[in-house]
Image 1 (cartoon, rainbow, N blue to C red):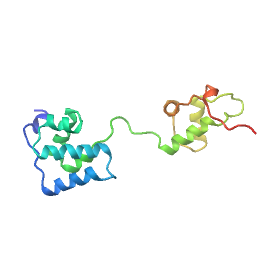
Image 2: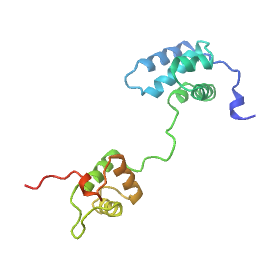
Image 3: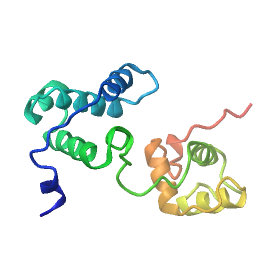
Image 4: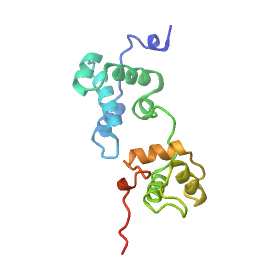
Length: 162
């Protein structure tokens, strides 16, 4: 039997403490929307609602309701509410590093160059100590995210010469 079969048919039973915790999580301003939704899913399942009813009440997909239920039964409340990691590879650059690369792309290119290239930006970001290492593809994605095309000079914001 697969992992989906292991908890089939089991109902969620919440203690009073868990019920109180779930209500607090839904009302807390410090909790992100996805965690609050998972808390609501668990609360409704604990009240005896079927997965399809919980799906309709929360706007979550049926698969999300099932995954949240299974995770609660296997790993507990904290893991079911907070235990999800974003899919995919971790971010290579933080917001500060991205901002520095964007600022570099908006500055004048080095002497002897008329425009920035992604490879040139990557090399200069490393040389100036903005990042420990970065590749041209990462730089390209950062620029794309910010809508910049420094190789097309008209799209780059530059300070007016006075």
